Length: 429
Image 1 (cartoon, rainbow, N blue to C red):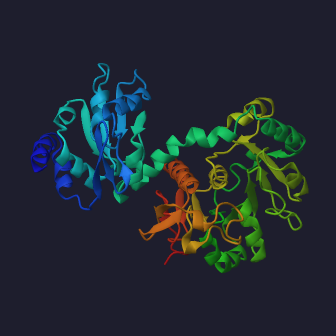
Image 2: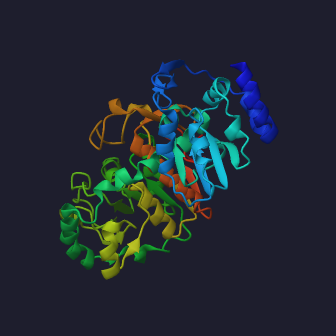
Image 3: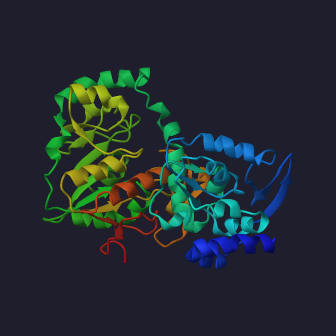
């Protein structure tokens, strides 16, 4: 085993001396068991790394999912080395970037097999995934290693998972769906009677905006938010639909509400005291909820194909959507002109073993007991979450990275750490 490591490490030391030094200092252990079939593989921490019957055949199937005409490809995870070998058989391939997802595991497989053939290929670049802020495409991510990614590479693992699941997650937003077509027809009269959300753009160029989500940490800010709301000069309060009720129950009136989800009803957005509060919505919203709302309404679309015909026939503002209502709320704040945005309840996780502020466990989605995943909080500790929350976090982080002209702040360290934000010292000591 040590002999193979020395041979492989010599190539790495010659080609990537910094990565070699890093490899030597990799800490952490993995529990490994040999699995035999017609071929053999490893079980790592109970997860089978590759096929145990035909590793090379499996790698060829994986490689077939990557386009043949791309001169540069990315592989996330090493496996036992077969996928890089197969991809390097392509005569048109100019560069293959191999991204390590688990340093300790990579160090182990270097001990077990001879990897010099692909490591020494001049087209190969060896990288650690966590050194980069985002993923590269086109890519193939080895399924087992997305589960085995270590803490350093976890952020990129989350983005890989989000990207791989994208088409699956979008399956319910088929423009040909009878439900979607009917809902858009039902909302059309409301949409045509309401103002275009574009009228709000550029109206807050000299004002900070608070964007208020429904994460559990919102509950720790009710008193402070109520005090800020009472000031003569203060930030604008934009809240998402499910935060509206708990805010009102705690004496806080938002300046504007954003709603996009077809399942939001008057239970979530009670209309009785909505006079004077604008609502920004998209025409997948419940038309009965929209009609009941007493404040001014503003229509908008996302880039989704379900709105393609409406965008052409009845142009309206377009807001950024990535699965959560927090995305269009933040985008609206930016398009209204905010140079400084503070996020409240944007937790993307279950701190304090709660799912949402002001709602019972399971009211707005799966209960805490079903949380099987984790993200890092503002203290660097793991906090439980669910898979879709991690995807929503990835989308928001990409949005923030794309708007460097805006200063983004987070009001709590207990929720997920949001790349690109600072902590607002008024709320985080």
